[in-house]
View 1: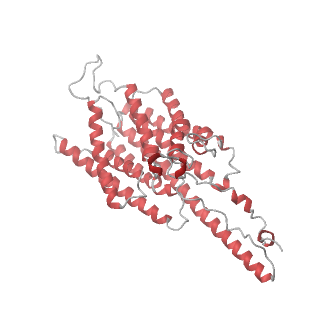
View 2: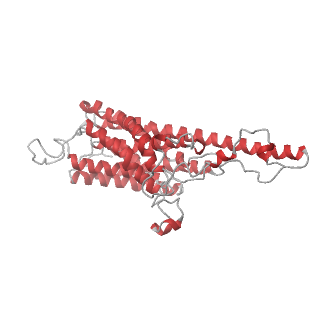
View 3: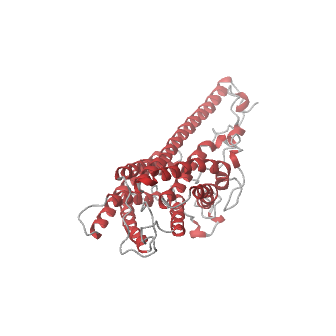
Length: 401
């Protein structure tokens, strides 16, 4: 009498290795694709019975491997789209600043990706997804030291996907502080946000151990009536983190000279016009960001091999599209109604679309398409209100996003 692992002609398959596959890749969205079902009985009797059991086991294993491969390819593709958003940010920021500052802003965007990669590899991912039970910070997987041990759980593609998100959070600040931030100070900020601040927020909301996580057992936290915080793709985790940091930075640095006051500190009667030098780059950047969002939102399902996962991914794509469209239209319309000219503001259209995208990111997998239109519409209106409020408060955002 022998177990099926002893009997089958595929001894290289080690069930114990598959058992290491524990916990979600991130955010606890769906359980990871597990190992083939282990045969717990014994094989006896005829060779036909043994061959049949072995065939079932091998088929189960191959199907699981195919599912894992498809999901890994999907995650890597989605992560690549998210990384493409760096190009979108670069073009949007470059078009929103004056010509003399283009090289400066492009260097900041480039270093967000480079410095962020090192910071997130060394400590950021460990702080966010370490395996300990801490609700605020993780304590292992530094420098991806356990890569081999956790390879079966998809650690490599998880890190790549999460790094793309972390770099996005850091880049949001680049446009806000354009034309008035020393380069070394910006480099230090970018590394600190990517390696420490952002991971702690991720840990709190997306990791199963987090104190706000919707993926933890309800008994582990009393907040929000035991439901936790649902932020499917990062309206709060990514965009609110980056936006809040940008607001603080803009207040500390103060406005650009000539924006609200002259060189003697005297308040201007109306804000100085410091429009960007290229509408073409602004629109190109907006389209690239919009395109990258199809990796950001549908990609956050993290698997395409489980039953029903493709349906959720499709819903995310539809909601992402409708929210961006309604946000652009509502922002354009409100800016036009408040303006004393009959000219539509293309900057309002671009930023309205981005506002709609940010607004739908949290609930793109949990609302119907009609609701995404409403969410995007409200996002566009909020953008116009916030833009006017910043001017009233003399807070200078070069990108006005």
